[in-house]
Image (tube, rainbow, N blue to C red; front, top):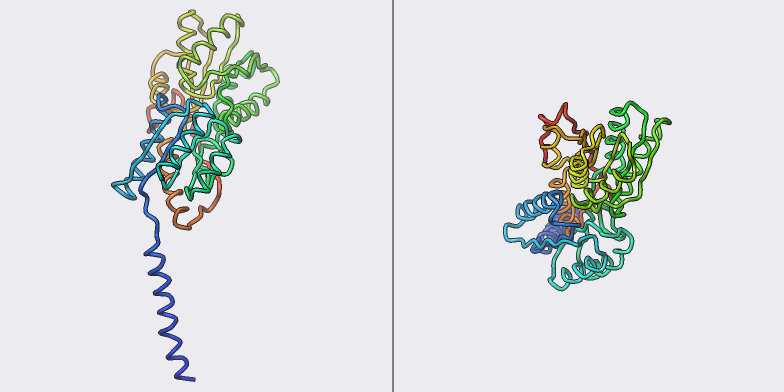
Amino acid sequence: MKYLKKAALPGALLACGLAFGAHAAYAKDLHAVGISVGSLGNPYFLSLVKGATDSAHAINPDARVFAVSSDYDLGKQSSQIDNFIASGVDLILLAAADPHAIGAAVKRAKAAGIVVVAVDVEADGADATIQTDNKQAGRLSCAFLASAIGGRGAVIIQNGPQTSSVIERVDGCKESLAKHPDIRILSDNQNGKISRDGGLDVMMGYLTRFPDFQGLFTVADPQAIGSNLAARQLRRRGIVITSVDGSPDVVDALKTDTLIQATASQNPAEQGSLGVRTGYDLMNGKKPAQDVTLLPPQLVDRKNVATYKGW
């Protein structure tokens, strides 16, 4: 019996050593990352890409990062994913143009052995998702809006491309506004295209169509900036504008005399960084604690903007 015990111990140690050695020998390194986002003309996505790039280079200083704009075009984004597959990337970060229809392209990437992490918005079939708690962001922004107009009056929700994040922000906004029976929503279906020009164009239509309204919620800061410009051009005052993002432009706007009064901030750099770290773990067999990670938003207004760290 003593002999058997002595023989068993080295064997167990040897097995552990072999297992450890195998794990070390076959651990996958991060050589290339593909990133497809809505628009690299949007500072939000630039910050997300920077966070992802910094994280990738922390893992491997020689890692290559390819970042492209989908322009919210499903066909274009599907082609970008195919290009990533052909380029042999190890990991894709994807801000989906269409969370459901992009599923076929995600499936092709995964069949090629590539880990896909959805960022900012959901994507069918993704291995993990990193995004803001968008419904809470909408709640925060529109709770502020309702309070700022005294819980009564006419408001407009300026919508955007129908990604999961935009839909959730609008849903959260409506939850907050529904708590005030004296607030009525004049419009909620116009697409500001997550851009300054889009927000300006849509706001021009509102100002022409509606002679009097008290509040405007936009689903993204670039739209808020454009909407404020439209109101200035038509010399309209007395409108409270709130939004979602916490972008540098809106931080500046909150420090000056504009109609923009608040934004629910996101942390795009952390989304990108955590997306890469999560993807790298998945490459090496380590699953995240949860499939969807929601980063909490923060309300930024004129009272606390001076202490807001920003992107």
